[in-house]
Image (cartoon, rainbow, N blue to C red; front, side, top):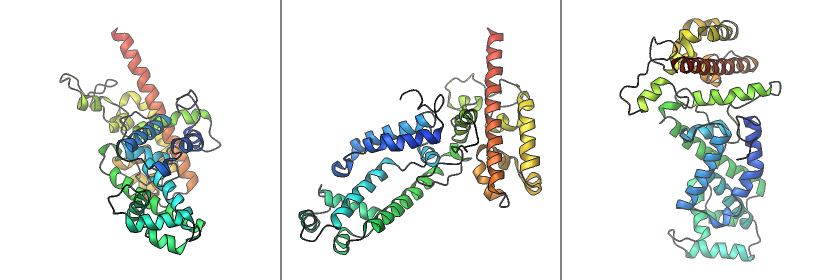
Length: 335
């Protein structure tokens, strides 16, 4: 992928996804409403699509799949192909009854069995998958284009929303990520207001890695390593295991960088009730994904939520850069 589209050294993520939707997706899906790929062919396209999204989000390839759809607002490639197929069938259904396309549709639907590879039988299966009217009913009723498009978008989005949000709960690494998936809308962690600078855009990838469980600390290295001698102890303070909670809230080596921003979040931005009743888990949740504050603090208005997200991005990025600098100093000293 060319420079400028990496997320780390190029445009902000929202702009990257917009360009991806305009220039890449149409080419990727061109003609697939007729070819209707299945099996390995569909898997190849799906893997490429997910790889591109992860690269645009500056996330590693091991990132849980539900997370990339929740963050980017992208519809899975299978759903996008199905929408193109249903759009084409809608055009056929609105043809005059004596048209060749419509006569073929009637014949195929009436003569072919459900295990046939006929395109119209594939359409029949897709309609059933999304709880849409039957193919024969659509051919007879001739639903108007705008109404059909709205119906397809609603049902396809509803199906994949339920599918992705359900699968998100199966990944422990995503426990701090707000699993609400809105097709076509980017997550608040990705959003960048017009008033913010490109410096703010550079902070987003660090926050995304933390939110998706792909930010590797010593506790993670120990858990996934075959080296029995590798310890989970924090290399910065040597006082306890370097878990996510320790890194964000407790490590004394990072207290100077942490305290001022945390104080701003707690004492100025959140209410007294949350400040006294909020648990450590709630505080970590607020730092990692501020979109959940609406559940914890219904009284918070949108400007406060945006400010909290800004402060939490600053915090995560500052902790990340400070940790990297200290580790580099330790390596130079030991060598």
